[in-house]
Length: 228
Ligand SMILES: C[S@@+](CC[C@H](N)C(=O)[O-])C[C@H]1O[C@@H](n2cnc3c(N)ncnc32)[C@H](O)[C@@H]1O
Image 1 (cartoon, rainbow, N blue to C red):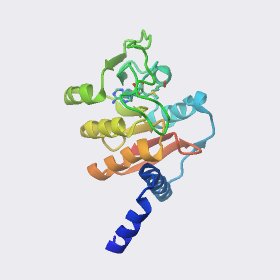
Image 2 (cartoon, helix red, strand yellow):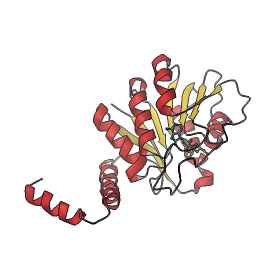
Image 3 (cartoon, rainbow, N blue to C red):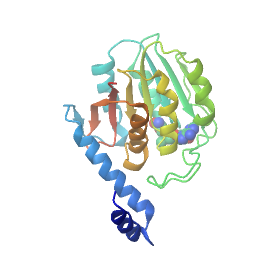
Image 4 (cartoon, helix red, strand yellow):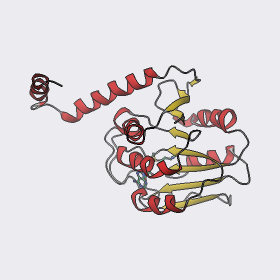
């Protein structure tokens, strides 16, 4: 960028709303990056309560009946976690749910949600399935020791539903050592300045490439596969 352009940008930002500018920048970036992905993939129309449509498609068309290691980041009361438990019945599959169980560690601007929103009162979802386990605490505290001893046994599926840029980026960077071509990532809120930005920065930093498997029509809920 030339010094004149930097000056012009500074002039525009002076007194202006920097977060609005940042939002616009990531919205533009998200649109351009998604447009580069010319692969064909199914697009579904559904509202939030029917999220299982995307999960069910990925489960039957991509994962099949084999064992999976499903790691969910952002469990709250377990709605999506329990749906995944019901979708994959393989006895060797494992399901790990990570959450503070006391809510968001910081304010989530895009969702207008304050710190502490999604407080599950410290309780885990009620599950009797022995394949499921929960890891309470901040990802920033619990995930590094987990990732250090984790040995994937089935195809790795990461469900990223923590909403925040900080949480999503931390998870992806920490799990990078286990992410391989074929790893499936599902984003629940692929919002420009949050989960999308975190994923984009992760791919840049870790030299990753990916393809879209399926998505909701507005591309806010997407299932991706790592290819490199
Ligand atoms: C949108 S809710 C999850 C919704 C859930 N998947 C469902 O189906 O209802 C987001 C969750 O992410 C958790 N979360 C966000 N950042 C976190 C972090 N850094 N460490 C632990 N939990 C986090 C919050 O506690 C919250 O429960």
